[in-house]
Image (cartoon, rainbow, N blue to C red; front, side, top):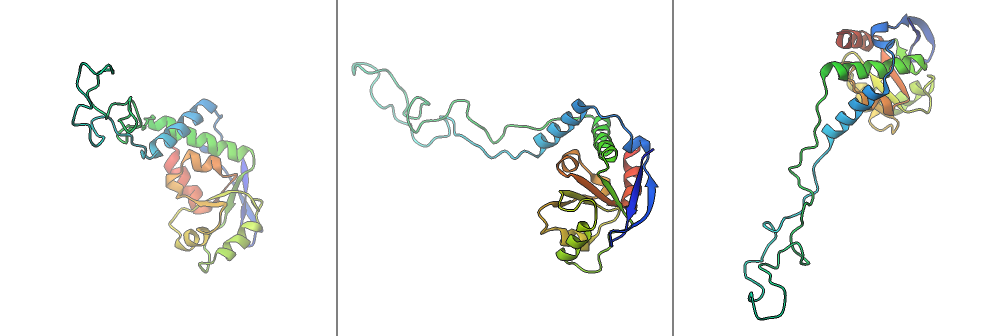
Length: 210
């Protein structure tokens, strides 16, 4: 079982906590983590590209020239994909479905693997609490600069909704927020450090130990 130091808002060590091996002691399988990331990104993909087919392009009602006798190839519409301004064959369609499915157990396991990797590499920081007295970005920045995660990309998480923390972190480019009971693999991977309060740690155990 790994032990992690507990820090206060002053950046001082106030104790330590033993992490649960069923969440923070899982052997990492890169294929499982990759599957979870690909699924999450596919499900978040927004379908914007839309090309019109020959039936959707305006015009093309009249036959450009008669069928025979002109010496030119026969053609029925100037909206053909062969013509400039015509429809597109096999173009992007806004109705295309990019979503993927993943087993809930696999998704949960991938999340625990990423948490385990952060624990092994010493990139999990436990806070006594994250109760900022004021909604000030500068105040949060000072707190983070006193921790080992200074200057790094950080994912902050708390056990309960913390409006002061959410608003204070909004303008910090390297700081992200996520509720302890709704973590995801992609946010954890893009953040070098995972900073969570003690209440959030309890919520993680409660949510993902199943």
